[in-house]
Length: 357
Image (tube, rainbow, N blue to C red; front, top):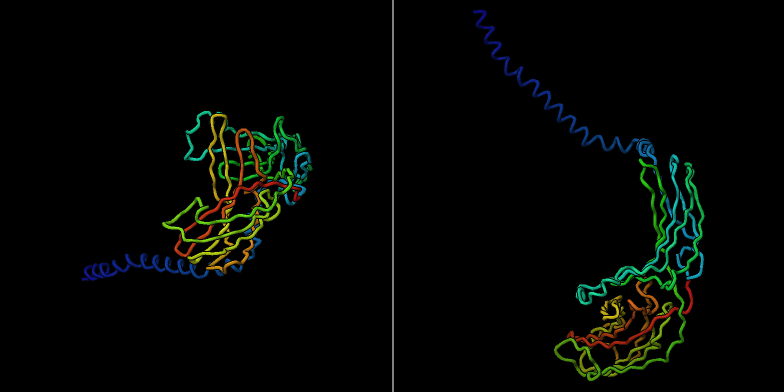
């Protein structure tokens, strides 16, 4: 009888012995999950930040910067570009030389609609070098943990046969001037590089023209967008068609008569970029900015002032060379309540009378 009782007791205790470790493991998993989810974030927030900062600052962070002597970064041809090369490091490092490169060029690009139009143009689509210079600042040495500043000077002199055109960021034509510094390291270290863009301003002073008075009627409008153009009579005046790029474009517009209510009057500044060669040229007008000068059905026989500033970098003095041209236009756009739209175009020439350094 005793062996039978022992056997029965083992059979009854066996499931308990099997499930007991599983229950213990599951409870331990639940407790650890609760600890990491609810208790870990508060504990981490109470820890001093120096623990994490000290671990991050163990690495060696090396970097190089270019600082120009003018905050505006504006220069003219014939001046000297001055600045300092700033080297920073946490533990110091050695280098095999520091070189400074200056590059100025005109990059040309054909629009998609004119692609393949002039095969000969692709032979002259290479960037036009306006300025190129290289300066060996340091032949090699060591930079301490306190860092180092190295001054430099480079004269702004164009390549033979070229001029330093003003900086311009367009759609198909770009005129840029870049300064690049390169710190050469050893075979097992990455070279350090940094670059900065500086601006060139070109002076081509011209006397402004006389004010241009204009008159817009249904008969004089060439660009009629809409089903019908209502009867109207609009006059105005542009102060000058040769505009100083540093001064606003000014004038006034007057609605003498309009049988349909006016919704808006806008002023649109357009760039006309022309690329090509002796075989032909392709012009592409694109909008630079559009400002509203009147909203709603304005009063009749009232002068509405025109005042528009020329945006920096997206405009430059009007330019014409053998391979490209940069010209500008102004459109006066009148939108009626019926969404009929009329546009009057005016060609303008931008100049720069003096540097705005």
